[in-house]
Image 1 (cartoon, chains in turn green, blue):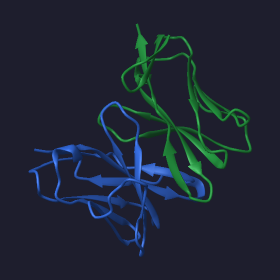
Image 2 (image 1 turned 90 degrees about the horizontal axis):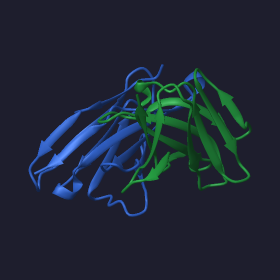
Image 3 (image 1 turned 120 degrees about the vertical axis):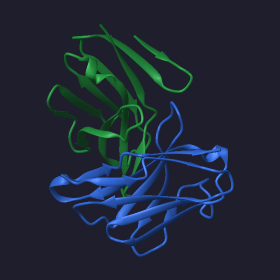
Image 4 (image 1 turned 180 degrees about the vertical axis):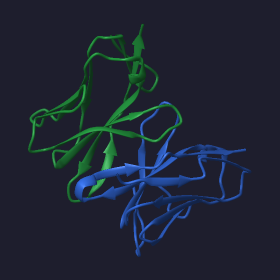
Length: 112
Length: 116
C-alpha cells in the first residue's frame, strides 16, 4: 500500500504484481511530461514520456496515463521486478519557460 | 543517444572555500542546460537555467552570487558554489535540453558535495 513518509511517499508491492505510481502536476500550460527512475546516488534515468496531446503511451512493461482535466499523471509498471526498486519522479515541461520541474517523487519497494 | 557527463561525481571541501562542478554534453551541442539540487529523500529542485553565451536565469530564492553559473561554450556549463557552508552539502545534478530524435532532457550522473 501507500504511505507518506517524512518526505517521500512509499509504495510497497509484491514482486510480480503491477505497480501504479501517481503524480499531480501543477501547471495547466505544461505540454510534455516525463517519468524518471532514480537509484540511490545516481542521476534520473528516463523511463517514458508523453506529450499533452495524448492521454496514454506504452513502453516495455510501462504505461503512462495523462488526465489533463484533473492534472494527473500515472505510471504503471507491469510485473514488477526487484530491479524496479527506486524512487520515481514525474516531471513537467513548462511550456514557454521551457524548463523541467519535478514532482514530489515516490519510493517503490518490492516485497519478495 | 545524447550523453551528459558531470564531474566530479563527489567532492569534499572545507567551509568557506569554493568548488566548481562541470557539466558537458558529449555528443551534441547544448544551448540550454539546467542545474538542480537534491537534498536527501527529497525531489530535484531547479536552481537555474544556463544559457550559452548569456546570463543564467535563476529560480526564485536561489542566490546568484552564491551559485555562479557559466555557460561559455555549447558543450560546457559550470556551477561554482562560492564560500561553501555545510548547509550547501547536497546532490547537484545538471541536465541538457535535447532536440530531434533525442527530444527531451538528458541528465548527468550528479555530484555529491559535502562541505566540512
